[in-house]
Structures are given as structure tokens and as C-alpha cells.
Length: 231
Image (cartoon, rainbow, N blue to C red; front, side, top):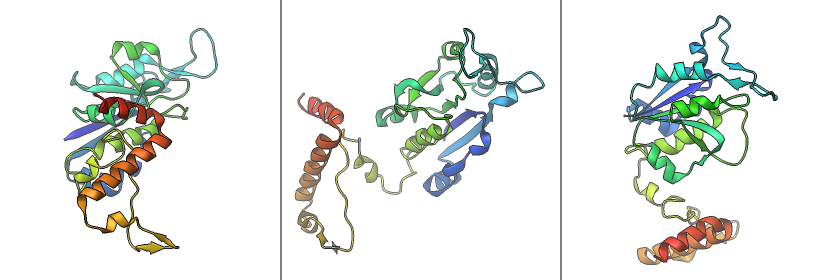
């Protein structure tokens, strides 16, 4: 069973959307589990202080290394488990990275204020990852993105396993257009090739569509795809 362990100052936000739909079904089936740790519980003073002013001056507050270390050390016993910190400075989180993170239980550290003391990142070998080039008020929203992406990859979560292989990014391309009934809607017809029953023609059409969409909308992905297929 894959376990996600979330270290946060706002445990009340969880499980949130992860307690509905296929994620809840997978939780009930014990395909995965969620543990939420309140970082504030590991503060040592009576005021439960988790942050302080930054050395060298500057605005805002910085989360304390000693408090975070205590929370991690008392909950992460397996040194092989990854610890990630969600940060705009981190490595880009994508589908390939998600597949790597599903191979072992995952510990996710949520930052707030102006971030966390750099020394905790170094001393606990914490990986920094980013879900995009923007800044959030806190990491919890990003945690939902990361866990969502990983959980749906776990065996037994999606009803149709073929859905995974046909999704965007799985072959380096964006997904082709999809259609369903009614066949004609507001004067628009479903592409005729999809009605032929010829699986080869349909597969070829879908590949052409995926390539065209990727080339127009994501030239960065198209460049990688072309380079990979030229080998």
C-alpha cells in the first residue's frame, strides 16, 4: 500500500478533495493511505512557535529547522522514503517524476510564510519540487496536485487501465480530441473516421491529431518528441 505523509500547519485541510470519487474508493480498498502530521505539535515552547524572523533581515517569517526536523524524525523511520518540499525553486513536477514518486512511500513538507530554514533541506536530503512558475500562499493546494497525479497511477485505482496509456504526456504528446453521442450537435458532426470501425485508421487519425495539437500548443513537448523519435 502506497502511503502519502503530509507535514503541514493546516491539517484541517486534509483529506479535502482526496476523500471523494476514485480517490476515496482507493482509500477504502487500501490501495493507498494518507497520514497528516501537524508540524505545530512538534514545537517545544508553550506558544507552539513554528517560525521566526530571518537572519540578515527581510520581510516575513521563516519556518524553524528544529521544529520541522522533530516532526520528520519522529514520523519518517524508513530512510529510503523520499521527502519532498514544494517550492517555486524546485525541479519541475511532471508525469515522469510522478512515476518515480509512486515507487515508495512519500513524505511531503508544506511550507508557509517566506519558506523554511535552508539547513533542514540540506540535513534531511529533502528534494525541492515545483508544480509551476507561480507562487501560492501555502503548499497544501500543490499537495493535492501531487497526490492526485500519483494515486491515479497506482494499480487498481482507475477502472480502465488503457486510460493511462492513452492520456496526455504518456507518449510525449497531448491527447487527441474525444467525442461521444449525440453524433450531430449544434450542426457539428463527429469526425467520420471515428464511425468507420477501422481501428488502424482510427489509431492513425488520433496520432495525427495528437501530433498536430502538441506542435501548435506545446512546442517544448513537440521538440522533445521529435528528438526522441529521430533516434
